[in-house]
Amino acid sequence: MKQPTENTIISLKDIFIKFDDEVILNHINLDIHDNEFVTILGPSGCGKTTTLRIIGGFVEPDSGDVFFGGRRINGTPPNKRNVNTVFQKYSLFPHLNVFENVAFGLRLKKLPKAEIKEKVTQMLAIVDLKGYEKRSISKLSGGQQQRVAIARALVCNPDVVLLDEPLGALDLKLRKSMQLELKEIQQKTGKTFIYVTHDQEEALTMSDRVVVMNNGVIEQTGTPEDIYNEPVNAFVADFIGEANILNGTMIDDCRVKILGKELECVDRGFGKNTPVDVVIRPEDIEITAPENGQLVGTVQKSTFKGVHYEMSVMCGRCELLIHSTRSAEIGSQIGMCVIPFNIQIMNKLLPFYNNVIEAEVTGCDRDKKTFDFELEGETVTASGRVFDVGTRVKITLPPDALSLAGDGVGDLKDVYIESVVYKGEHNEIILESDERKWLMLSDTDEQVATYVPLAFDFSKASFEVIGKPEEG
Ligand code: ATP
Image (cartoon, rainbow, N blue to C red; front, side, top):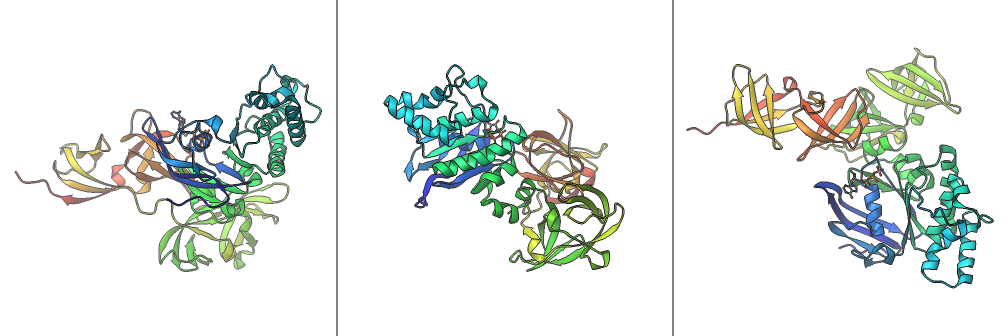
């Protein structure tokens, strides 16, 4: 097993956990360094809080190891880990004043009165609450209560502070100023902060490193700049900031085809004629005269946003988002250019074409022209073709043959929506059933991390017989 590096304070190794038969963390590995501000970012339900709770000792993983300063701490209770947690609901004691709330942990440790006074005073100065010692908790604003909660977590001198969406209850303006304050407090105290949020802007503003999670796995770890400029896949690109995410083909090293045009890029090693996802940030598209553009499109919408215009431009059937300080008339044709460095190439989220079912026919109705087969424990009836019972059939469903069905209907009753990425024309949706992933196209927005019934339109499928029924 790889040992944590010298300044690694926390190390998660191959952490796996299931709740009610559902995989919540799927073999995650993460090293967190001393003095780092690390943010775990991801959509609701992806496993962020569970990761934090495992570090805090509130939840034990089914397998995998947690190291603290190089020592394995599985089974060590929360109060024996040098970690403190700040929850979204600050859990302050309403009957105690500010001083006593902060002093609480120190009193439990039975520290001398003078030492408690010194530590609390020092901590209240750090969180900018000097002079508020005697104030009752109920007379504090949300931001002030937040700062008391942070002071209380820091006063016992933990090596690591865990913060679970601590700014979630604050209004936007206060939230923004608290983000900067939190970062400042972290720098002043030199502690390791592990922060959980689903707000990408918050993560980019505060963190030294961002850990992007989805569906129980870590998709990418890196500095905010890395994550924004070099997303590893369409999920990360879509989740972090605004992006045009397009289907493309890597023709060869440094040549990519998107929207019917071959463009120069800087990426290599994807092979020849490989389907890829291509990311172009809205601010990286330069508007030119149509005759000078690598791409040409028609302006559909233009909104002034203070510093830039936000434009929606149709390029063939694909919608592109542009942020530009130059405006263009709605309905006019414009040219668009992107320098090679600003075209990001990524592997597709689903590396192989996935919607292929290999099944044995379990029933058939020649009059209705239907046949049945078993799929992940459910009986599915396909119409339009008929095969003898016992025939093995390979069924290929194009992504537009999949749709979400109403409650109680559908060929698969409970499928998880893993990601939804807008590709300029449709949403590309990745679904997960018990045994496989599916790729679906949809014009409507679907809610990630929810369970839905999935229906197949077999009139769009292709069928191939791969085994005949046994004779006799
Ligand atoms: P959010 O941003 O909504 O808080 P999250 O990314 O922090 O989401 P978790 O709280 O880690 O997600 O939860 C991940 C999944 O595990 C969710 O589907 C949740 O319902 C489930 N879960 C969490 N704790 C338990 C538990 N004690 N028992 C059963 N299921 C649980």
